[in-house]
Image 1 (tube, rainbow, N blue to C red):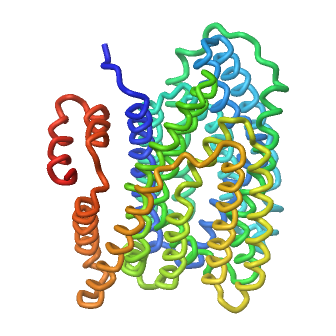
Image 2 (tube, rainbow, N blue to C red; image 1 turned 90 degrees about the vertical axis):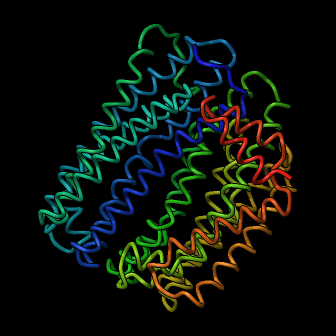
Length: 504
């Protein structure tokens, strides 16, 4: 029988499971990208980036954001003691997902010649687009399955499925690249890995297939419709810079720009994992009508997000140049400035994911629609202004400013409908510590120059941050207690060591 854990430890464990598989996926993605930059030309890397963009269009615009409804209603029904309704939501969502996942990829397969001619000027890549339709099918169905597992808070199972899927995906792609399959090898790797992940999702959901109560489809649509519109706008906002780059600068610049985006994954994966673990917890508390617990969860999440995420985001900004040159090569050195801007943007808006989770759990999803519309408008206008004379730096500036504007909008609305329940002391101390740490690393780089010093930069930054945490007394006894609750009993000694090092 498993030992009971506190809600805070449950969120931490869930976030850790999700982070580990996202981190593994992103590390493998970085390794895969590093191989791709060695075996493909910069232009072909741009083609690869465009194919990846195509695979993201279908789940965004044709899933109706129904997977988000699974993440909302499954834990909410479970929290209110209505397990049959939770199963009904899962069944209805997956059935809808299967229908759309069969229909739209079939259309993309039939239109592959036309799409190739429009994007590349000839049918030269039609065969890749035909194969891509198989991957699009998986990428459309998988969110329905994965969000159902998140709603059930099966974070360990998700971690297993995703880790294996991404491992297979990138390993096959790397092997085929090494065997000179080129772009075809990468696309085949995507298909094999994504199918592996989907099969495991299905396996883990099989125990929940029996017995369910009917849930009106209109209820799911009512919740997901604003998220769908917001998601479409958010997609355009997040990628309008890349689409405009194809028009104004070309696929070669897109390949360099994508190198910066790929390098930022390792840090951004932390926010993704915490957000995925937080939302079902918040929804469950909302289902129990426990606003105090929701406030406490928001406060605790902000504390640990500040302590963990901020130094990583700021640290990545300080080592952007050696990071880009080490993993992608000197041909991609122009991507270092966008990587700095992406990292600083994620640090500034780190509390936004908590705000998003709280607002979504309260069902106020129309806010996301207006936020996405605002972000898209700002990003598109700024990219059109900056990109012609600043190139990829102009595109990254547009993305940075629009993200900060969207963050300000979401925080303003959270203040109105729920209030700010954040640990402001931890946030201020983490910002100060991270700034000093970043300055220290920048000074070291003036004396020790070179991409192979990157591990040393990371070590110096980590040691300085831990010293500053102790100096400014960031950690306390309750943090140590949470770590003990989070860790298995045989590893509780780690919490004791942490207490001696960091707790004054």
